[in-house]
Image (cartoon, rainbow, N blue to C red; front, top):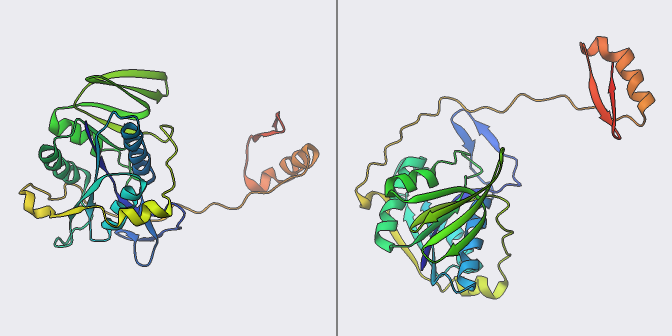
Length: 267
């Protein structure tokens, strides 16, 4: 069984971003694989290690630098990569629907039985690509998976929701999106990083698929959230009560509730 894993290049989660009116300033910032995509790659590799999957194919859509993201997936254990380049386009950052359309074309070409992708990217936080891909393919889908178990022609997934734990049984082929609790991705070892340099990456132009990639959403404005004043640390309950009693008026606090070492205090 072939497993396809889409991976996205994003600003590294540890980087403090700089915001511009139309988006995030990407100049001279460290980029890495989207953390949820790492989880998806790890799950696919584990399926191969269990002899359930026969091949793991990673696919990334973006500028030429996206090949670095694919090399990371290959170093983790993916067998080969597909890079859909957007270098010839003015809008190199495609919107979720356009990405889903391109992935549909890749799925039709590669014919995998399972697509595992991150539930969302940490830059857009849209969580749309996986469900859109399943809809375009008319495949079963399971989102926010915290456990994935293959059973013949079915896949069982566990989802942690606000109302409890859900277990879904999906018919293959299917699209599954990975939650943070699904697994802990491995670190690529130096020998595997060297081996990844020899693995094949096929490059295709986004415009060569003949699908409509026009954006459907316009970003009107992007700005930093309002800053908050720093809090005050107190060493004891008495000090906390004193500050609430004497400084509440200046802070314009009507009723203040807090918790100090398990004790609820209100003034």
